[in-house]
Image 1 (cartoon, rainbow, N blue to C red):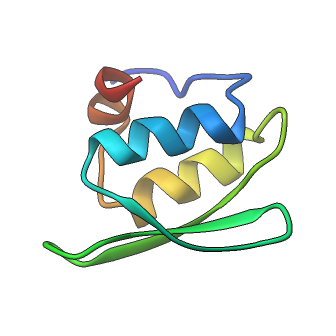
Image 2: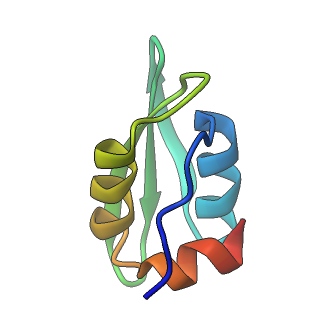
Length: 74
């Protein structure tokens, strides 16, 4: 099992999710909603300098990705 990456910024997470087929649906303040149509998934990413590991874990599971898949997308 791969370890969850630490110290990632919101923009790095967004770029990785875009490689997985997500696109920016809307933005409100520092929170960005990304959506993938097929298969449907929607996640909210805070555009902060550093994302906590619990938040990142929630984003990865909401995107229906494994940690290994997410690490490959980085």
